[in-house]
Length: 204
Image 1: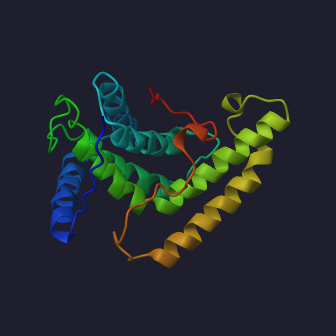
Image 2 (image 1 turned 135 degrees about the vertical axis):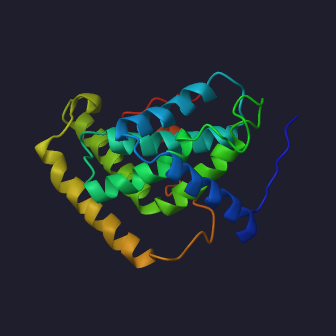
């Protein structure tokens, strides 16, 4: 038997998480980019040691994508865009979780909420990266290549630049719209159909 629970966070509820993010950013000052990525990656590794519900797993997949966005040599984000993603990842460096991660089933619930908020804020970055990974995957297969072995390829750069330009235009258009609705994960594709990316989280 399974049950379905839907809940909505109002502005007052979200303020609690926004304060937690602000505190995490303050405590993360001085951390290196690699340290931030390592912290977020450790959360994914820890999450696979305990039982977690599917709806939390779906959000952890998106955290994996955010980490991949700064690790992916082919995507090579510019400094400002890279900083935006790293700024979202710093929450996962704060050891003072709202809910301790070792709590069975719900230990990663607060992390899932924060990932959802970050997914909304980085909606256009995630959408562009998804499209880039899909393009790289399909083109690499067509050329008889392994997408994991490509790194920076000249034939990828023009598509990457198009998608980054689109990302900037859409982000500027939506600037200041806030957290009006669920992210929807930017793409309706099931997570298991994603194009290759340098991720670490494995769905089980």
